[in-house]
Image 1 (tube, rainbow, N blue to C red):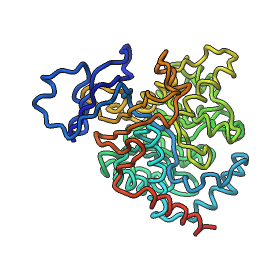
Image 2: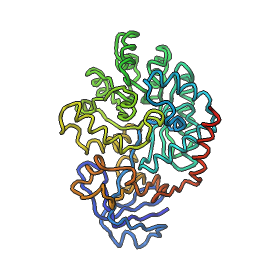
Image 3: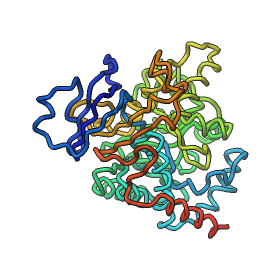
Image 4: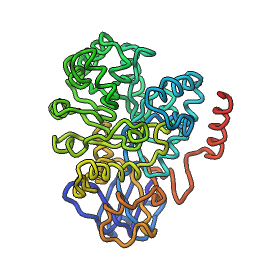
Length: 425
């Protein structure tokens, strides 16, 4: 579709660029023009829609860089428990009851929550990535999938086969090499995975340094931290990413900076499970790419990047005892550009001509967005998912003014999700 947004303000997130007053044009899924209204740019084009933005703000969609989307079925099921008890006593037994059909439906539930809160792509790791890929393709959501191999399931050979298969699945689906965590995967398996990743020259992603216990037990096994161990076996020769990165030493940060390993912080989940607070200021000081993620609905429980942005900033201020720590502009960059770079979505990082039309409209006609002393700080410190007026992915509007345009009845998705829970109890 050809869609013209006019009478808008545009936050491109490109370095050194201010907010633009003008219009943005989309043709065949790509941004074709950003700038002042120019009659020559619109006269010869058939527009399927021309949208008066009424001075609302267009910006890149948020990139939710660490998710377990189908875990929506465990929202509010296993709260107020420590991580190991939560995972082994509550989560794993329920997950064992999931069917493939369940996972597709529950992933869709996660995606419609993403869409309604301005998230245009997610980085998912869960039981069956093919189920998530199917859900993404069916409703038009962009996703990056990460392998989750561990001692309980999956092999290096299956991880490689899935990587190639899913990268051919849909233009909206990308696959990455990954494994669940060092503490759930035997050393010999990790060494084999590292060799495979180096052979096909791919980055590797994993949960890492989420809890102090995890790091302490790695020292007991290998006498080094998880980052040091994985680096020693060549896991990060082509870069990659770590989900959480709460308990990191200065040496760990040096490894990430040298090897191009991004860190995806999950403030809400880390607080709720009492895992700790990541040193985001220290990561940025070491020139490490930082992204934000919600984690799964079982440990958060909301899939809301506005909440993650707020916490990412204010937690650094209190831990550093410095109200100037972690500028809102840096946090907004983590939630958009940082996530895109971490996920390998270089065509979706900023709003610019030739980039994918993955964007959102922020309703500025709400009290929490007024007055407009500083729009980016309003987004981080007072913004809410209620400010998301429109979400477009790949040039298609999937959410607008509270309505979902995903080709399915969302009430049916809600009903079926509750039926899944009833069946399991």
